[in-house]
Amino acid sequence: MKKINVLLCAAILLLTITLKAEILFEGYYKVTQFKKHIGFLVLRHEIDEKNKNFKTTSLIKLGKAGFDLTESYQAVSDSELAPLSISYLAAGDRKTKTIDVKFKNSKMLGTVVEDGKKTKIDEKTTKGVFLSSALYYLMLQSKEGLKTGSKFDYAAITEEGPVVMKGTVDVDKKMISQGSLQLLKITNNFAGSEYTNLVTTRGEVISAVTPATSIESELVKNKTEATEGVKLKAGTLEKIFGKAPAGQTNIYHTKGN
Image (cartoon, rainbow, N blue to C red; front, side):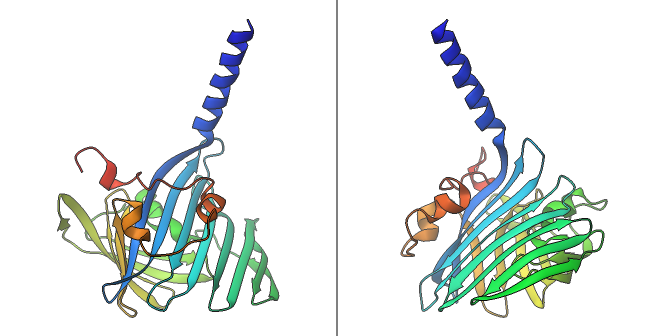
């Protein structure tokens, strides 16, 4: 009987862990400027199996070629991608910024601390506004969808703001071939910047280019290629993600790729 109880407890524990979250996407990006490696980005999108909340967790570390920046955030939305909370931290060049806000009853409430100066946030939000990190997943849920030739005007909250900014997505009429992949080429004008993204039809960003700064982020198949030569304090990934991301829940690690 004791052995059965132990096995039952183990099974319940395993089920609890399994139901904790469904990872939709997880990957490492190599970040370059003028084709020189300057850092890396780790990105994860997941759904909490218990409450169906959608969560994006991100860490970017720039630590080569004169860059010094560590930036991370967790952005949580409900099952319909309405915003619930943002936790943000950035440090570099002797400057720091933290954001801790929650959304309730059409209001954004919380605090921003920048270089030691604390600012309270108490602002109204309008219906339909979402967190910018959920953009392509929101488009997948929209009436028109995420497809060639589509256009999408929106208002989203910047995780590093937090402020509401207007944006426009334009998807090219033709798919782009990259190896065995067929990708959507997207121009996203948001928060005063223009970004060119290559995206799968299920919303996975394969690459992102900011023409104004020539900074590029490209999804790579393994962690080492992204992080080589970039120092990160031990335990940082575990602290932000819960455990160090494997980076293998993406198009490059599906069967046939």
